[in-house]
Image 1 (cartoon, one colour):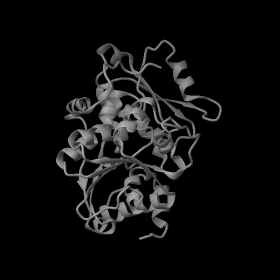
Image 2 (tube, one colour):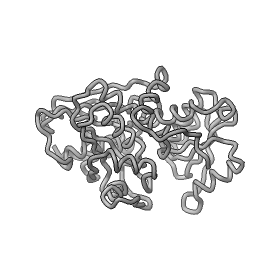
Image 3 (cartoon, rainbow, N blue to C red):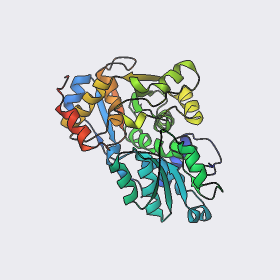
Image 4 (cartoon, rainbow, N blue to C red):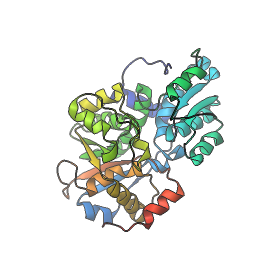
Length: 332
């Protein structure tokens, strides 16, 4: 598998360039706050609502930044990606917009709603059995002559730079943010957010948040090497990647100030609070930042003078999961 050609590793300048590339194509998502949540946490919280983005998640940003930079010949040949969730939909939607053929390799146990959404954007979905087959091998078999451009889910400079534009927008409008919280799966959003935040305000503390049951990035951060967790079982399905990438990890180690983990119970509580007090539907992965504040795990307790930014990464949650979460009693 060969990803799109690159010339340099991501930095603040490449994130700024990605913002120009995305201009007129991405949705400049809203920023919300809640007096009730602010009072509960003891600080001013600003939520960057990427659940309002195309396909309902930040993944559109990285996919567009990478795919739109392909050569005319590469676009004519088509692209290929593997994903069971938001990356699949993002690649499919971008290819639909740019009139490019897309092939998505997806596990046969992926939620039917996600497969249908991917296919609705015109992509060809190739299923595989994750218990007996490797998505990498399936992708290589389809693309054995490397005729298709492979679009990775997170470990690529163009993807990272695109994801960082969400934090760039938030920080650009609110440069006094003293702490920025972002969820971490493969590390694309967190690494891009860290580069953006530090580029706007070098004093801003950047904190990555993971579920306790999927803490590979947190372990990696503290041990100084990439740790893998096989099939992490967390409700925050967007963080079920086995490990961070080598590029994302290098950026996280240099620019992220802390990594925190949160319980499944607090993740669900954060989803409920966002629903009832921001009136936003958010998937569990997108609620990790608030969950960390609710558990008071972020280094340095919030004070009234703090302005804390939270990247609310997406809103693709199925109705049954949302109903189950809302039916449970609130903690606060």
